[in-house]
Length: 413
Image (tube, rainbow, N blue to C red; front, side):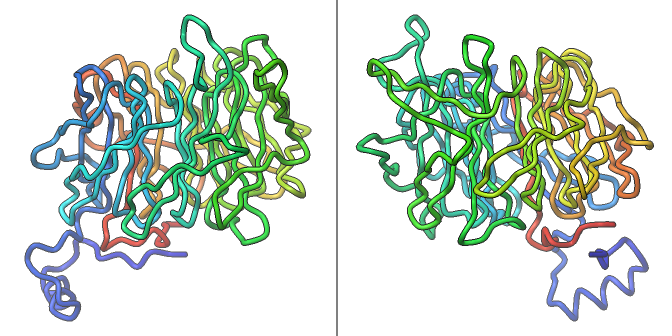
């Protein structure tokens, strides 16, 4: 759908439109979206908050940014579908902190919640904003010195966006998974329906048998049930999980907006693995998969159109750009720019959901955020004005939310 923009045109036109819409001189129309970047060097961690300029994509730090993240070592940040709240996951103290987003983009801490396992690593929200899924490394009784299987804490999200008591699974306050869960994704909004909604968890495992586990989501309770391609059993009081094989050291996962394709990066093989989502959420490897990336891909995102896929390549200091064949899911390098240099050690990569043309990476080793403009016709990337932008020490992840005056459905084509 083409966005009918409120551009920087004649002043008279803007004033006329502002009067017609009741917009005051404090209108936020020039702020397309907000970008939030977690950083892990300080204790507690920090969140850098930025305005994303509508015309250029340039970042401007919001007043009072950065702010404390509320816990130690923030490793993930996810936004509620209503763009009014974000949730920050802290690895070292196993907590999730809820923040409300003000009308000016500022973050306001609300509540802190305990994850029902140790060392959470990733999070995902279902498309209705009803459940938050947090993957953690160790179930109760396991530690770094004595490692074991992990799990997923399932938090109900209330109408006020607060988190409720974790959902139980067979008497446990979490859904068991395998060893070294590293990433999680929930079915996107365009693919969701009452009969078929899925959650996928990537296990690195410890024996080289890395897998992606598929679950059917109960849309009423949030509970997860392994699908036909996944098995969760208990052997000698230890969880054993089997799923669809995926590479050696998988690192990130994403699902396209139609819910037909799932992609997983592998940081050891420098590849992206592609899967078709079949009946019941079972994954079938694509015939043409895997696809080559830059060195050590650890971040992955798909643009809101479901047309382009991007990987953040930590050791190459680049972002790889791919075109998604919307019929088969196969990936080909973008003809606009198959790869572009960003800051040092990119971790997360995200695209603002309002126009869907500005891409950002959190760069862990040089304490910056890189900004790129996406060509909606070929997926190629070019540098945003004044990139890179300063951040606090050790940026770990990033998420963008649309400003209230720019709905997420308004995507440039």
